[in-house]
Image (cartoon, rainbow, N blue to C red; front, side, top):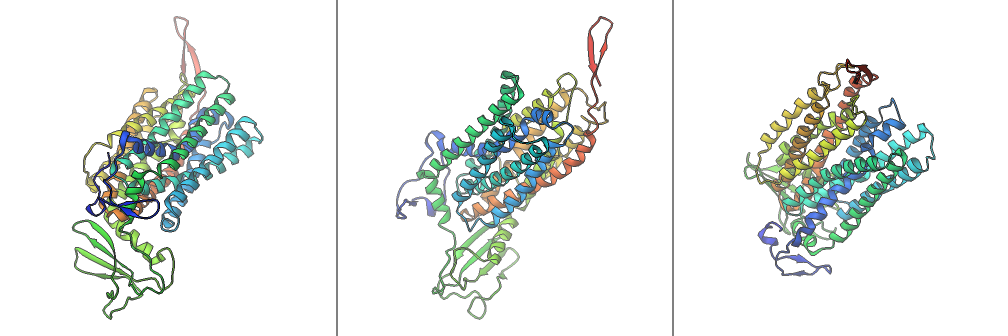
Length: 493
């Protein structure tokens, strides 16, 4: 069921025609909206997971290359640009427009690569390598715009829906890992099982897109988005002599509110709005007077947008750093280094198994994040930093070259299990709690700002992963077999 909303919004409902009517708070009967948000999380991570989870096919087609690392870094770099652009355009383009464009950008490369490259094999090896990287880049742009927009979207809804989207992210990894395992088991031909694997991903992505188009029209979603938008400042035309709006930031109560100023109120000592935003009040209370735009426009000025982001970031900085650190440590190791852990007995099945364990345990961690516990931001940051211990542990699974410290395949599986659970939990809780630290009208912006931190951590982690790759690039020693005294053979490096 939906959580309680502010008292001022309790009996408001914006009808499609724009009329406001009295109506009780709508309920999420049968948890249909929650399920739709879970599938939304599946939708914006499924395309990328589809490209990197068929690691056996990639190693077979591009032997001796850093294809998985290149895909990961390409995705992260484009995604960082996309999330910053989305954060800048949050006031310019509608939420559902950004989400729909993101879905189209994600579906196009999946269709093109699966048909033209994997199935028809129209390109040379070098061309296919470049096309795959370009496809991952386009997917990164589309999926990141979706992801950033959805976090702003669920920030307008009760808290559990943010947790639902993040659980969907992990569900995408689990579904794709299981899809790859079953297609590989059922079909021995690598080309055939890879084509079917991609078609399954395309079908699921289309399902997520169609469901989003249906859910955005529901009374439940319209109710909460109408309530959250009710407090947003209105942009006035050139003929309106209103003086803009004020940003009230109560540091002690950790509250930010944006209020319209009344006609005739003064935002400066002389009784007229000054060209600069003013800072006033004591050490625990700040008020920013943002002047009325001099020209008619449908979005705030660049100065106003920076001001909005400053006051929001001031409240959620610990949550921003916590999620950035969590994903920085994870991307140092996954998917790059984990895809390069090999074993003579399991062969290419080991990296597939390790990645499946990570996705499944990450899913469990995100479910645990739904448990009600109000973490302080600084405590979350400390626990997120402690996860750095996974970096030396995984490095010892591939180093020294030829005979790693943790050579048994059980070790990377255990480490992947623990890393996945902690990634799911500490990667979800900051995102869930951050939206509650700001006023309802600023929750979409808070969700977008958290996604910028999230993507910054991913980018830095992916860059560090290239250093880890240098430890594994010469570690693929040829397996040999030794005959034992009873006539059997044992494998080794």
